[in-house]
Length: 216
Image (cartoon, rainbow, N blue to C red):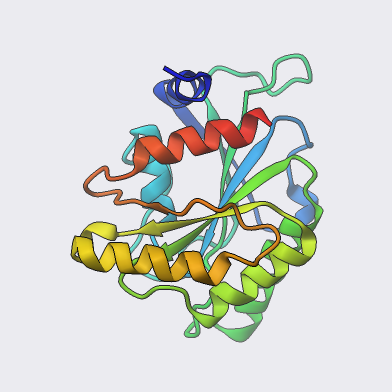
C-alpha cells in the first residue's frame, strides 16, 4: 500500500464538518492548512461528489436547482480547534457553479468574481478539481476557466462526473478527447479521472489524487 493510499484513507475515514460559507473574499478563513477546491458548471455534481468522497450524504448541500451553491463552502475533518497549533490536515472547498444563465446577471457576476479572485489569490490552494459532466463534455465556460487557471498557474485536474450515465466505450472516447484538449495546457494535471458519486466509480483514485496533491 502506497503512502498516498494510506494518507487518503486517514483523511477521508474520519467525520467531516462544514465550517464556513464565504460570500466574499474578506470572509475567507486565515491561510493555514492546504486546500483543494472543486469547480465546475452549475449542476455538474460538486456537492454530491464531496459527499461521496467523505461518505457523508448530507455534508455538502445538494440540489437539482442549478446555482444553489452561492458561496465558497469550507469543509474540514472534525475534531480540530482551528487554532494555529491545531489545524486540520486539509480543507475541501465547494465552489459556486459557473455558467448558469438563468440567474440574475448581477448574481452571476458576483459569483464569478468570487471564484476567480479565490483562484488567483489563495496561497494554500494546492489543486483545483475541475468537474466535467460526462454526458456533455467540455463546454466553452470550462475552457475559459482552464485559461484562467493556466494564467494563474494554479494546478488543476479534470474529473468526469456522472460517468455511469454513459456507456463504457463513450467514457473511453471522452477520456481520449479530453486528454487531447488539455495536453498543451500548462497547469493541467495529465491524468483525467472518471467518477460516479452514485455508483462509487473512481472515488478511491480521486481520494489518492487529493492526498498526493496535499502532500506536495
